Image: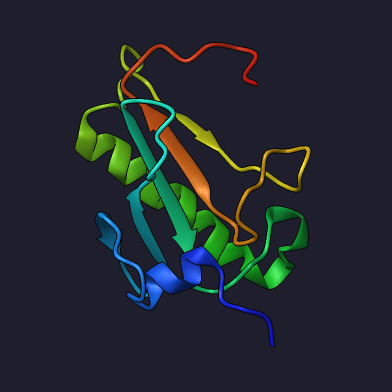
Length: 117
């Protein structure tokens, strides 16, 4: 069996995190290396290594992650079109994935440029 990922260790409370949301399907916390004034990670409690390995039966969890991100953006006051926010899901090395556990980045609090990276 492989070692638990950083995110699995946060879910199990083995590693502390600044948790902003938790329910039966997901947990959200502030990123320790923020790329914007607000940088939150929303992750499923079920281990899905990356979006490219998600299955059709993960549909509920995947949709739930986006709705949690939306709610967090609303709570922080970034859901208006004047403010705005960005959601990012990285997949694989070239996609910028650093932890092999699917996660949604919620970035807000500054003007985000396009194209990214």
